[in-house]
Length: 219
Ligand SMILES: C[S@@+](CC[C@H](N)C(=O)[O-])C[C@H]1O[C@@H](n2cnc3c(N)ncnc32)[C@H](O)[C@@H]1O
Figure 1 (cartoon, rainbow, N blue to C red):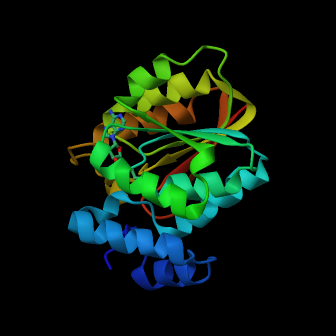
Figure 2: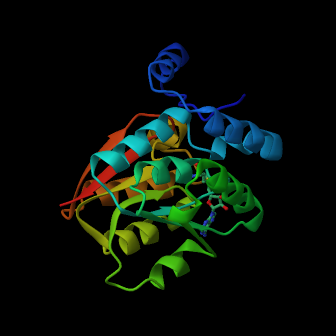
């Protein structure tokens, strides 16, 4: 099956790294298969399995209880985040697509995390802005329309506890991030990466996993 893969890492090395990362269970593998049947080549919208393993690990490592996700799609990343939360934890999942999140809802039930996940349908900028200023998150994952990243970042950062973590996907743009002639979403992502790198409110690390994943800790 086609998988989201970095094209800036030698394929054999990327495959080796994936093969030496704890693999997805049957439920996540089944979700990836079903999503592939549903959307074909757009399966690349789904996070890579090794990112899913990392998300669960990060959520557990920081002891997160309250999480928010921007860009749920068919639910892969939300399940990985929800599985890292304690039984009384809560994930707010934001997306605009009823069709895709219907699959996610089904898999939240199967995974036994439905009681931890609350879906908010609608443009995520509106959803986040409508949250009370005192809403407080420990963990956030941003993986939606790239033009919205600066707004999602600001709205989430202001509601993140100190020491909380934001993970942002696709920050290397398949390796095109350093190409000055690249168009599309690349220039906007470069601006976003620059904004984060010079933001004194946070400490960040851009990881060369999958399509680039930036980890941002609120100081
Ligand atoms: C790359 S996919 C997310 C993949 C998901 N994280 C996963 O692991 O399967 C991007 C998602 O963002 C959603 N999206 C696009 N624009 C949005 C917006 N303005 N507000 C909320 N969600 C949006 C799309 O419907 C799509 O499901």
